[in-house]
Image 1 (cartoon, rainbow, N blue to C red):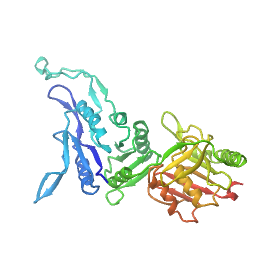
Image 2 (spheres, rainbow, N blue to C red; image 1 turned 135 degrees about the vertical axis):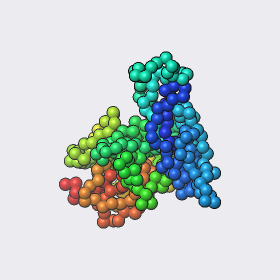
Image 3 (cartoon, rainbow, N blue to C red; image 1 turned 90 degrees about the vertical axis):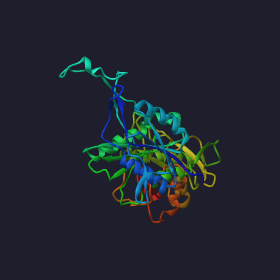
Image 4 (cartoon, rainbow, N blue to C red; image 1 turned 180 degrees about the horizontal axis):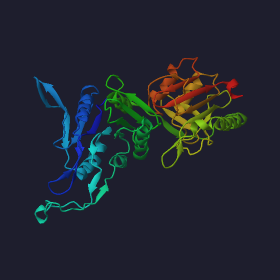
Length: 388
């Protein structure tokens, strides 16, 4: 397997006030520089590190001396606009982009092209300067590199945990990132990977499931694709009954899907109902605004990773198909993005629609009827008696 190529940015990204003065922040990027080293040494990845010349650089110890890391390519930027240009230029050449730099988001609207003429002023003079909020670079990456795995960081200080997670999740949705790593400045050692499913995977230095493993797992994931097929042979009455049952379950469990995200107000979660005694099922569509819409999943070829369906179904379709196939007594599945208090923990997070995610169905104990996937949510498996 080819070595994965990762672009990591670190340190401060400054903005020019004049030809020699800059506006910056206090972060120099020590933790991100070490993360770059970890990706090379633990993740066996090929890393390009983008930073300012005066930032902390990735290093290693050799003969009791700290030296520049020989297997990390260093690229220097010269302020915000140069950083922005280089991120967009380098991103398409990599498998993943991890934006860890602390960007100065207050930029002078009209910086002096030359040195500020201080000789024309006297002490005590006030110099009005208009600032603007800088464009958010993470929002521009997918426009130039749509297939890259994108990761960002969100740092707040002294805020409620819910506010931190929601702030990170807004970035995930708006930038189309794979995940955003969120942490509070009061405890920099604890981080959460906030995912597209609205879940949060917590890890810290004492836990092996860290950022390197999380990212490398995402890079190695194999995704299912959708094949829009024609209607196959099935009992029309079974199909009708499944749709009716889906509407009933939607009404019964609607409070679990109450939370919506983003400007479009999509609802996250899934309802699936088996069609008769087959492994076909009706389920919710992808990118849904209402839970009532239904899509027929005719079959899933897990060897070729193909989902045969009448239109784009939920990304959970491969996992749902395996659950129905492996558990013939199950008639319906309700999945929501809250962690149920009585559900059994089952499996580490994997992006929905991947072979790793679908494979979790093969490890589920036959007695389990309610379980949860880390950073994804809860699944309830319903038998015939549960539907009455």
